[in-house]
Length: 436
Ligand code: GDP
Ligand code: GDP
Figure (cartoon, rainbow, N blue to C red):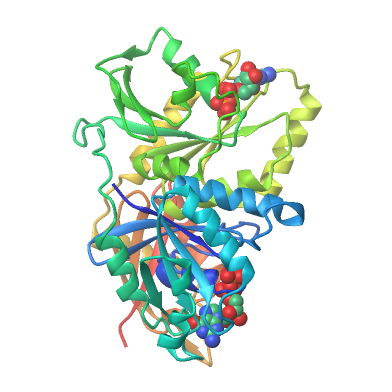
């Protein structure tokens, strides 16, 4: 199982600099959609063969009450979800009272904690380290996040020592069932929808569900198609109602998205679209998973309200125009049955195979219909295209000066492939390779 690392420390010690260095940036792959908020707080990284999830916390001042209360709460939630804590301090500034307060609290959490003394490009690393010995953390590293000095070495050691996670009972990879994750903020209706689907007469639940620490996998069959439902909220439905307000777990959510073929993103028709909705959508787009959008709680709204919501959705979330949208009521069952066809379409689109000659011909037609722009008087040349992967559907395009292609032209090409191949519910990702 993938280790989860929480990055904690005071503001300005270099957390986001380090975070950006150790996460693979997907920004290069995903076209910049106007209006899409990307939550750069959660990222994945790879060192050698090992991958990890890293959480950049808000920053602690040591004063958990008062104005920093909200940020502190978020940070400690992240620490709670993590298997490893990376405590970052500023070597240039030296040990502060706030560092000591954070250290005290961390010791009480009983987590594996590593101390990284950052900004040691500006000072003598040994001297900087010595100032922090008193905090009593065994694993200490001198790093410089801006230059990347010491960072890979540190990450390697941390991952070497990472505690072995419990084995996961993942559903069978080759049982040709479509794995669906239900994603949405708390109270949007995920459990209600899952209960509705499981209670439906045309659904045949079979086998016993698999479980991981984070989710339950429920297999079922409908119209001779196998599905596996990934239920992150399931723990609560199994009876632990005493935890009335379930903590929203970003780690669980991300893991559910990544283990799914198709994500059903739920929005609440009776509430406005929030930043949390946009962040969740950003996460789904980052992973590239096939997507179906369900606008829930459609009941109780009149025609005028419905029309308003549709307009607002198009306006606020234009970057999910590739996904089917369904207006449903999980409570009454209205519209729920229509989700299956969209899930099937999205899955089929995301798994499409297209030959190199066909993709190249498509590229040529796209170029003929709308030429790439001139860059310093020279025309960008795109020569051929081949498929680079599935779910998301990736097209690798070879040419010259490809780094100069503007976002608008990339979006044109993405849409061209999507429309020509009649893709639904899957993103098209373009990767450009320059051959000169
Ligand atoms: P955060 O608030 O903890 O996320 O800190 P940031 O990553 O935003 O960094 C705060 C400031 O410290 C920025 O101006 C960074 O450029 C600077 N910084 C980060 N890492 C280093 C480093 O290794 N050396 C030096 N000299 N400055 C750094
Ligand atoms: P979850 O936190 O996303 O799993 O949300 P729940 O399934 O627990 O639902 C939260 C609340 O919304 C509950 O009170 C549900 O009864 C209610 N709810 C769920 N679906 C609908 C719906 O389609 N219409 C209405 N009016 N309420 C709903």
